Image (cartoon, rainbow, N blue to C red; front, side, top):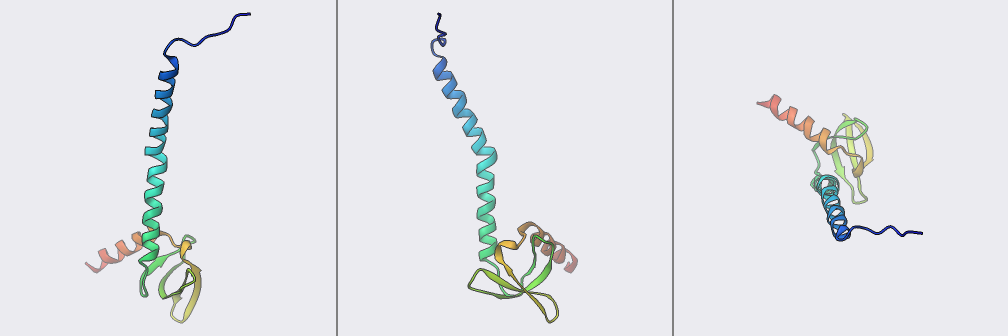
Length: 106
Protein backbone atom coordinates (compact mmCIF):
# COMPACT_ATOMS: atom_id res chain seq x y z
CA UNK A 1 0.00 0.00 0.00
CA UNK A 2 1.41 3.35 -0.98
CA UNK A 3 1.27 6.34 1.32
CA UNK A 4 0.48 9.70 -0.21
CA UNK A 5 3.02 12.31 0.63
CA UNK A 6 2.58 16.05 0.43
CA UNK A 7 4.82 17.99 -1.88
CA UNK A 8 7.86 19.51 -0.16
CA UNK A 9 7.11 23.01 1.13
CA UNK A 10 3.35 22.55 0.69
CA UNK A 11 2.70 22.93 4.40
CA UNK A 12 4.15 26.43 4.51
CA UNK A 13 2.11 27.67 1.54
CA UNK A 14 -1.07 26.22 3.08
CA UNK A 15 -0.28 28.04 6.31
CA UNK A 16 0.23 31.34 4.47
CA UNK A 17 -3.04 30.92 2.56
CA UNK A 18 -4.91 30.11 5.78
CA UNK A 19 -3.42 33.18 7.47
CA UNK A 20 -4.42 35.37 4.51
CA UNK A 21 -7.98 34.01 4.67
CA UNK A 22 -8.21 34.79 8.38
CA UNK A 23 -6.87 38.31 7.77
CA UNK A 24 -9.42 38.97 5.01
CA UNK A 25 -12.23 37.59 7.19
CA UNK A 26 -11.15 39.87 10.04
CA UNK A 27 -10.88 42.95 7.79
CA UNK A 28 -14.25 42.53 6.10
CA UNK A 29 -16.40 40.90 8.79
CA UNK A 30 -15.22 41.28 12.37
CA UNK A 31 -13.63 44.74 12.32
CA UNK A 32 -16.64 46.62 10.81
CA UNK A 33 -19.06 44.95 13.23
CA UNK A 34 -16.87 45.83 16.21
CA UNK A 35 -16.67 49.44 15.00
CA UNK A 36 -20.46 49.62 14.57
CA UNK A 37 -21.01 48.15 18.05
CA UNK A 38 -18.67 50.76 19.53
CA UNK A 39 -20.58 53.57 17.75
CA UNK A 40 -23.93 52.15 18.96
CA UNK A 41 -22.65 52.06 22.56
CA UNK A 42 -21.46 55.68 22.30
CA UNK A 43 -24.82 56.70 20.80
CA UNK A 44 -26.72 55.08 23.67
CA UNK A 45 -24.46 56.59 26.34
CA UNK A 46 -24.82 60.11 24.87
CA UNK A 47 -28.64 60.18 24.99
CA UNK A 48 -30.19 63.09 26.85
CA UNK A 49 -33.63 64.40 27.73
CA UNK A 50 -35.22 66.10 24.72
CA UNK A 51 -33.45 64.02 22.05
CA UNK A 52 -35.71 62.84 19.24
CA UNK A 53 -35.27 59.12 18.62
CA UNK A 54 -36.66 56.19 16.63
CA UNK A 55 -36.84 52.64 17.99
CA UNK A 56 -36.04 49.52 15.97
CA UNK A 57 -39.81 48.93 15.86
CA UNK A 58 -40.28 52.31 14.16
CA UNK A 59 -41.74 54.20 17.12
CA UNK A 60 -40.85 57.91 17.01
CA UNK A 61 -40.65 59.96 20.17
CA UNK A 62 -38.77 62.37 22.40
CA UNK A 63 -36.79 61.26 25.43
CA UNK A 64 -38.51 62.45 28.59
CA UNK A 65 -36.22 60.76 31.11
CA UNK A 66 -33.08 58.60 31.04
CA UNK A 67 -33.40 55.98 33.79
CA UNK A 68 -30.48 54.37 35.61
CA UNK A 69 -31.75 50.84 34.92
CA UNK A 70 -30.99 50.99 31.17
CA UNK A 71 -34.42 52.25 30.15
CA UNK A 72 -35.85 55.47 28.76
CA UNK A 73 -39.15 57.22 29.26
CA UNK A 74 -40.22 58.09 25.74
CA UNK A 75 -42.94 60.65 24.99
CA UNK A 76 -44.66 59.44 21.81
CA UNK A 77 -47.43 62.06 21.85
CA UNK A 78 -48.21 64.86 24.32
CA UNK A 79 -48.91 63.20 27.66
CA UNK A 80 -48.36 59.64 26.36
CA UNK A 81 -45.22 57.87 27.61
CA UNK A 82 -43.57 54.52 26.94
CA UNK A 83 -40.82 52.87 28.94
CA UNK A 84 -38.33 51.26 26.54
CA UNK A 85 -34.91 49.64 26.73
CA UNK A 86 -31.96 51.67 25.45
CA UNK A 87 -30.95 48.70 23.32
CA UNK A 88 -34.24 49.07 21.37
CA UNK A 89 -33.07 52.27 19.68
CA UNK A 90 -32.07 52.47 16.05
CA UNK A 91 -28.94 54.57 15.63
CA UNK A 92 -29.35 54.75 11.82
CA UNK A 93 -33.03 55.74 11.83
CA UNK A 94 -32.50 58.26 14.62
CA UNK A 95 -29.59 59.85 12.75
CA UNK A 96 -31.70 59.96 9.58
CA UNK A 97 -34.72 61.59 11.25
CA UNK A 98 -32.48 64.18 12.97
CA UNK A 99 -30.68 64.86 9.67
CA UNK A 100 -34.01 65.51 7.94
CA UNK A 101 -35.12 67.79 10.79
CA UNK A 102 -31.95 69.91 10.55
CA UNK A 103 -32.31 70.18 6.76
CA UNK A 104 -35.91 71.40 7.12
CA UNK A 105 -34.81 74.09 9.60
CA UNK A 106 -32.34 75.51 7.05
